Structure formats: C-alpha cells, structure tokens
Amino acid sequence: MRKQSTVFLVILMGAALAALVFWPRYLVLDLARTDSRGAVLCAEMHAGEEVVLAFVHSVNRRPVYDTIRVASDHLVVVKSVFDTFGAGMPEASTGEGTLRVAEDGWLEWTINRPMPEVVVRIGWVANHTLRLKGRQVALADLAPPGTAVALRPKAYSWFDLWKGRCIR
Image (cartoon, rainbow, N blue to C red; front, side):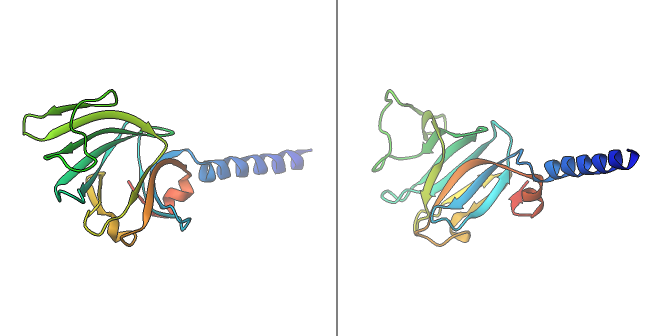
C-alpha cells in the first residue's frame, strides 16, 4: 500500500510540474507570418500594455504612429498620430473616432477599436517598426518586404518563453 501511495505521489508531482512548464498561461504579443510559417517574434506582455507600430505613409511619405493596447484575448487600436493628411488617413471626427490637433501640432485620431489581430504587409518604403519594451524592432529584419504578418495576443507556456524567442 505504501509503494502505491509513493507511485501515486510521484505521478501527481510529475503532472503538476508538467502543467507548470507546459500550460499556456503567460500573455504574449505574437508576431507571426500569415503564410503559416510561424512566429517571428513574441514579447511577454501584461493586459493593458501598449506598443506602437510606426511606419511611413506610402503616399505622402510622412510618419504615422499607431498605438495598440494588448488585452488578454484581443488588441485595441487606441489611436493614430500623424502630421499631415494622406490617402486613407482620417480627415475629420467620425462616429468611429475623434480627430484633434495635439499641442505639438500633430494630428491625433483616437479610435479605441477592438480587433482580434492586426495584419500588416511589410513594406519596402514604409519601414514598419514595432516599438515595445523599450526597443524598436524593424519588421523587415524579421521577414522580407511583401510578407504579411499578424500581431495577436496569445498565451504561451513557461517552456515557450524559456526557448528564448520572446522579448521580456
């Protein structure tokens, strides 16, 4: 009987250890190619943390900064900041968002739009850069221009984080 209890206890401890190591419980911002070739970057996040997707507008060649907030199961596009109007840029407040001129003269369109993911096609001219955790990551360094990548919140296990792919 004592041997059975010991075996049961060892199995139980092994299962608990496996759950601690392999159970996906850490929130990360996952950047993955949409062509199913897998993740190219991840960053351990907390719900409510924000990242900035910076790029150069393809028509007016001026910088745009999109602020994205990470939630546990979706993203929220908080606002876009830009200094001049261009194709596809908001030109007035709408039912969807509010446009205002900030003190520094830049235009700020606040939208707070929840989205399951944000898909970006890495541009040749756009110089897409992800600003997170005090770092700037050029997306063209992670995948070739023309590649579509998706930003999405995802749960990772301790083992996934331990593999070293994630920014902390």
